[in-house]
Length: 404
Ligand SMILES: [Zn+2]
Image (cartoon, rainbow, N blue to C red; front, side, top):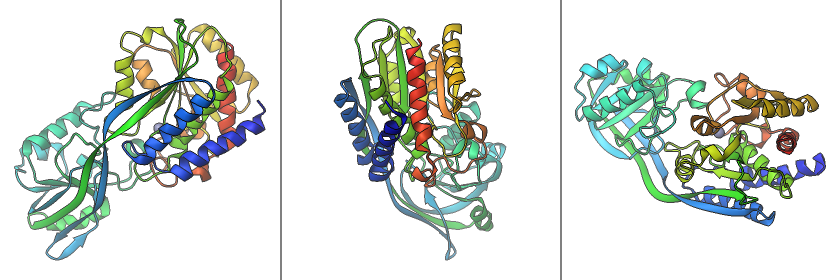
């Protein structure tokens, strides 16, 4: 297929995913519309499809307020937190050691400074869960406060471009919490020891979401698994993260529909990379228990198609043959380069199971991961996408697969 035609198709998929549908948080109607669309496209191109239902929670808030002696403070409900309406003494904590020795029973706790510097891994997040984080959540649960107020600064490394960021974004953590800017937190510090009233009108709603898999063959040979997550964070249309990834996967459905190489292809639309429990990833692992050794290679697409710079393919544990094939493709395509390793994506699921993988992304993002202020914000929209880059990634992956 001509590149021009592919660019037009990319534009149509992205228009639907990121403009007509928009935010695709797990559990939302929009998320289900997006997976239904992916399924429809795969089916129309002749792929055998398989959808798996996931039990998840959706979440909604009508806002939050905090006041002390008649003075109001700007707060936001922490995503996926329970709501609350509480009045009690405010205790300010800025270090873990202080939390270990302070009685916070039935208090409202302001977490600020060092203790609130980094987003805390969700309690049951299976792929990344530092001990310090588990220690902190355990201390808080044992301390049994009425609610938490978290004052956070900018931290692109763990929260993308979101400022302030919710310190807790965890539907399994049941202490109600809100978050605010660090500068607002400094003002609130003057109320430590006094009585404050906190209301957060948030609710959790049991819902469903789906993984969608397309297959082109039931042959037993080792399969090539191509993955892209379809969910977005709350508050973003998720263009680079990861409307472009899903679009490239759908373009591959077209480019590979008549592919008759040795290895079966599995196209996997995953749901939950940007969600606290990674339900789609966990389900996929469960469904493939004992079958990861049948996977020749995972190709995961996340963060591709950024307007600045070119695309990069980062190899992980490839055999010499596969690496040679990749180098040939990169050699022929000046707009694709070999990328450095990075791990904040679904290829890590496959790496942890011992599979080789290639992560496809934008070079600019890999190089600016710790400083960029785009990810997970409303700025991640079609205005920052280069459709040509999207088409080139699809062509590069298809050419690479043709060589295996
Ligand atoms: Zn992503």
